[in-house]
Length: 304
Image 1 (cartoon, helix red, strand yellow):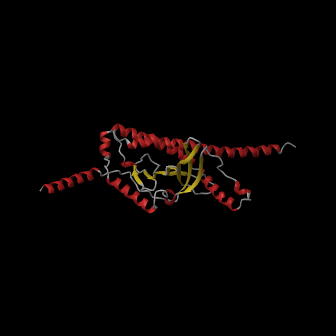
Image 2 (cartoon, helix red, strand yellow):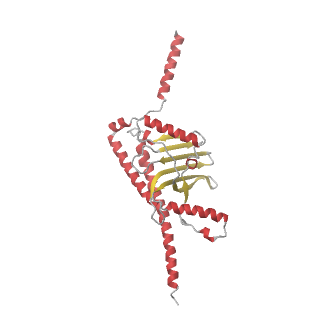
């Protein structure tokens, strides 16, 4: 009898342990009732992020420039003696940054997180779990063929060794803006609507053999709601962790949603808006400088 009692007690303890190890489901309705001030603060941060999206949406005209530069870059590689292919619309970017035209493809966005089909299936499962938990704003990502522009800022990781300062890795952070073009008529002003925002953070420490990759996808920057934001995180070659922002807590002990929006995401968007603005100003200035040169040549032609 004593042995049976011990076995039963062990099974009960194991069951309790397994139940406590289950992930906690966020009750958004109860959170809103218990912590109204936190919810109000979170909503204000969402409005700030939406305003940042509207500012970033004004640089959509850079997409066609970057697309043309990409095409002429390939042509220059094939025919380097043709000076026509050396022209670039976007010549200057801020320090430690580069910009490029990109196409929305799952293989491009999810290539650092494992097999693309498996990752997409895992995202769909997470979204379904969020909907089952009452997060009505959660939606699966429907990849399209939108045109986008990606601005990346990079830096090196240094180790202060006794003999010299060595670069042992790199950090890269990028913000990719995908636009839907609503006006396809020629000889008319093109309208670009910001319809997908993706940010990527990569940290490679070659000396320690550590690689961290995070991907943040907002499939609906047209509204203030952010419950559908997907966060992917991978450490080295371990399985990718996927989080739906709407499933994070926002309580006094775990204000995770507010921390993400206030301390990171809003600041990151403002930072990249300044970088994108510099790129746009450089492009406009270069165009105006060329016009000044043309006018100076015309004026010089009247000197005889």
